[in-house]
Length: 75
Image (cartoon, rainbow, N blue to C red; front, side, top):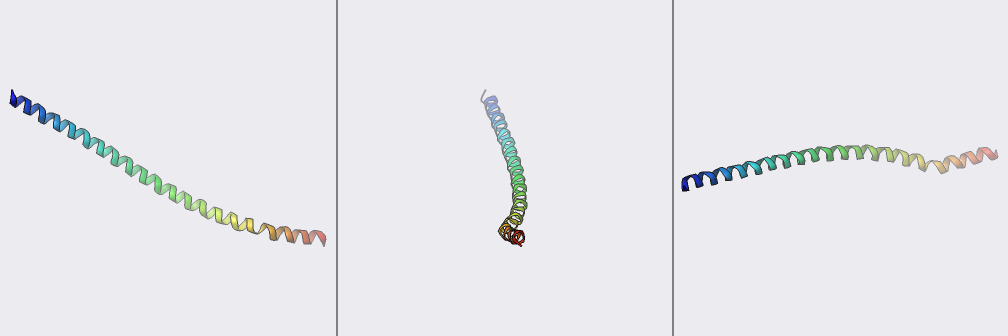
């Protein structure tokens, strides 16, 4: 009886270990997926930052343009 109990215990240990191995793999896969998504988001943010700097430079020119327009209007 102890032999079958030891065998059952060993099978149970292997079953539990297999379950943990599967969970570890799933967790690793999710971390890799999240890393890829974070890299994509960082890339997207860099593009947005570039566009924002272009917009900022255009917005900074508005007072100068309105001043010149006012001068032309009064001319």
